[in-house]
Every structure is written in structure tokens, then in C-alpha cells.
Image 1 (cartoon, rainbow, N blue to C red):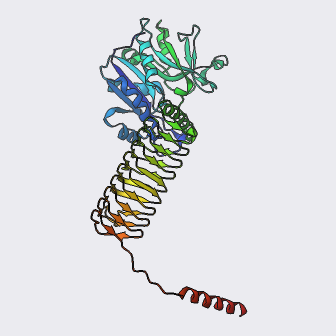
Image 2: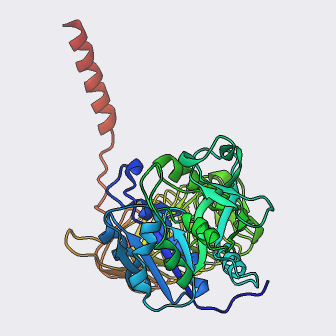
Image 3: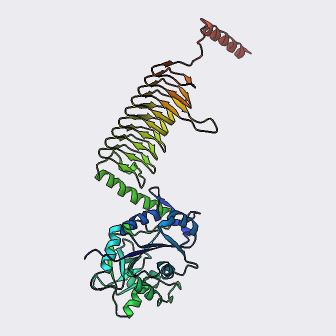
Length: 455
């Protein structure tokens, strides 16, 4: 089988109401790994370089149009009269397109690009099938439509579960609903599909029956059930998340990352990990995180929109928010939060610290309890800490403020003016000493308490 060079169009069916999801958000926009399931599918489609990508919408059409933007054209199916009727709504959008059409489902996001390619290659084989159906063996066939074949290659018939006989329901070869067909064949066959069935709908799989009536055969390829499992409810969405996370964890370890307790680590769709990265238990990656070679993410950290340099260390119990950037060897310790801030090479913020809207120079040391006071109630302001600077514990740096290279801010200081390089800044009230005062206070209070008890 050689790879086809014919032009390709993709039609994605997403007109269902998704009532079982019980959500104002369209079903196909619910996220898996932080990315809408429809986006997962479109990302797999993209390497095929389709001439047209058409998403058939109904309920929630504006939501889908906003997400796909210029990457796909949306067409409306109203009313919803079945999958065959849905595909027909894409005909005008395809215009005079004369290539191969791939029909997919927006709520079946895990179909691999390689599987799509196999379908198209099979369609363009020399035996010229009318259609190629994507089939799978179901552990529990349940209400899936069945693919009936006597030779293991050619489709004798396809039947929806509700229309299947008792014998046909015993077959475990199931129809995913997805198929490949030449544009000219697809719409000519659909025009002849009727709705004489239990639901009174126009079924896309019925084009196989119409083609057979003309003496033309259709065929199928098989894939694993996990690749074609649809998502129709919150429980199925959670199962899909588990499936995707398991795959991503295995992929991360295969590519050279160490996961101490893989089942407790949660990735986002775009998490990028270098070689020899170590990830301890209970770490959550939001979107937009990259981790360079040799970095360590300790237990119970949450990272989003940040960049971790080589050999850097994060956590345990740290939070890195969007815009955080740690250069090589930087260290963020327990109960530290970094937001829109850069830590230079070898810089440290080891304990109980908030660094927001800041730039920390190489080798600087931020003491426990330090806060960059970046918000005045109306605007955000930046703090700049020079290389080699030392910020004593429990200090407040009131932005906008600059701390020079190698400067020292004494513990407990509230700094509101710039500190020059090499300078010591101590901002504390003068200590008041009263010898014996505490002893006299304790004696007086004990006496008072004793008198109260007598009364």
C-alpha cells in the first residue's frame, strides 16, 4: 500500500446537543489534558494537510466557531436528522472538491493521524473500494453498530444495534462511525440513503448498503477500541483523561524523564520535558510548562505557564504561575510562589516567599518570608534584585524598587526606596529595652488572677 497523494478534505461531526454532559460548554470543547477534545482531533488532522476542514455544528455553534477560527469552516445542521444528513451539510462547503473525504467525530478525539492515513491509503488501493470504514473489536459491544464481514476484509453489511438481529448483535466487530470516501461517491451515495429505520434518521453507514446495491464493495480497517472511544458524559470525560494521562506518562518516561509515582503526576497537552528530569509524586502541570534537562520537580508542586532551566529545583509545595522563569541551577523551595518573575542562574528562594513581577539576578538569595509587594491596589509594579544580593528573612520589597548587586537587605526590613550595589539597608524601628518589666508584669497578672478565683 503506497501513501496517497490525492487531495484530502476532513468533515468533523459536532452537531450533537451533548445533553448527558449537562453543561453550558459544548461537549467537544471540554478539555482533556487542558486542551479541548476537538483541538486534540484537529491537531491529529493537521499533518494530513487537508484542503478543506469542515466542522458540522448545531447546538453551541458559536462556541465551536470561536475555537476553530480560521482553521476550519463551520456549517450548521438544523434539524439533526442523523449522521448521513450531517455529512450532507458539508457538501456546499466542499464545493467542487474532487479528492478523498475523511469523516470524523468531534467527541472521538484520540484517533491517531497514522490511523487516518491508513484509511485514506486503503481507499486509494487498486481494488477501488466505495468506502473504508474504521472498525474495532469491542470488549463490550453494547449498543455499537455492527460490521458484518464473511472474509475479514469486505463489508457484507453494517447495521445499527437497534436494527440488528439477535445473531448480528453477537458480532464483536463494531463500527466507529468514521470512514473515508471519495467526494464524488460520498455525496452521490448519501443522496440515495433513506430513513426507514427505528430512529427515522439518515445513517452515514448506509452508503455501504447503497454501494453494494450497485455491485461495489466497501472495506474496513481495524484499530484498538481505546482510539475510537466516544465521550458523551462527565464520567466518560474522566475516563478519557485517565487514558490520555496514562499515555503521556508512559511517553514521558520513554523519552528520559523519571516519574517517582507516575499515577500521581498530571500533564498538560503541551508539557515539554528534557532528558533526566525527575518528577516526584503529586505534581500538576498546567498549560505552557517547559522543563529543561536535569531539573527536579519535587512533590506537591503546581506549575503553569513557566520555564524551568537545566538543573533547577522546584518545591516541594511550590507554585509557579504564568511568566515564571528559572535559569539554570535556580532553586525554588517549599511554600514559594513565583509569578511573572525571572530567577537568574543559581538564584535561591528557599522558603515561604512570594516573588511577583520581579527580576532576580544570578546567585541572589531570597530569605524566608520575603514578599515583593507588587500591587498597589490599582497597578502592578516590578522589583529588580541584582546578582549576588541577599534579602534577609521576613522582608517586604515595596515595588517599584531596585536592589543593587551584592547588596544586603537586613531581616525584617520594609524597603520602599532603591538600594545601591554593595549597600546594607536596614529598615527597622529602634528597639526599646525595659529591664525587669516582664517580671513585674507576670507578678501583677498572677496576683490579679488569684484574686479573681477567690471572688
